[in-house]
Length: 165
Image (tube, rainbow, N blue to C red; front, side):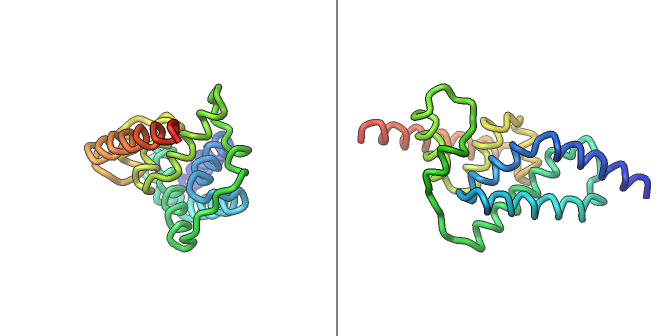
């Protein structure tokens, strides 16, 4: 019982320290602030209920990100609609100097298929290493790398074509 309490403490500290990152990640899937908050809340509830499955407290980050991404993907499956609003700009609080460029990149990333979008967000917005991304997405390391490079190629094409329109 004490072991579960210590895992709950680790989870609680982690969730409280990085909640803005969780919201931004989920928002990139839902495109709606209320839905993103609901998905984050659902992920937190699932994590608390499943904290006993956390084998090593050192891996709370990758363990919780996997739950967040799975909940985001479940949301997308249930809600096949995509809502693009002006809220995207308001909630895209990534620390880019050029808002127009940031908005263009954010839009391009949001148009990627979910598996590629996840890899891009985790790598560049959440600053995760390839090995962490592989654990979070439950994928092979080489699969993560190939998704990243394919996504980067698609982003280059998308952004270049947007620049000339």
